[in-house]
Length: 210
Image (tube, rainbow, N blue to C red; front, side, top):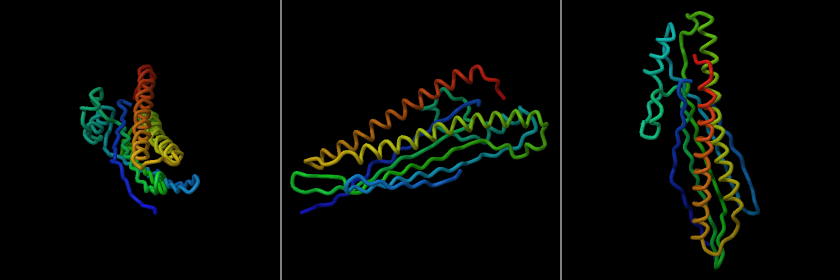
């Protein structure tokens, strides 16, 4: 006799931002033995717009229109220029019999939103200021792209490790192991992002700022 159960984890949202400084959906299917897995990655780019004529009004526009987040988690940031938000969810079905429990279907999805500035009337400014701004925004975009990459990598790692669990005697053991895998990779994600931001801070300290 086989029994089926569905278990869904909580949804976790993460934000990574930088200071001073594609829209797409990717789906992959995996099979390990009889286990079916599906990974959905959704990425959107959101631009907050402002009008400006010089550096002072550019910063005024950024201060006025940039993403607003709680400073409880980002007390070191007085101004948000670029921001990467993402949420990660997973759901699985497992099949149980006497002294045996295994995952049958597994789905993990990551929704990623990258927020960047857009100077809407840039064409009115001098070519020197335009070029300086373009270089600056490119740096901010590259920074946020790394945070996006880390989010996708975390989803892939969770998917891989959960698929490799195999059978357990009790479903409670399986559930516990799934939760531990999720927790371990989320901790690693935070460490990866903290390391990257620290490294970038050293670089940015010596960079030529816009």
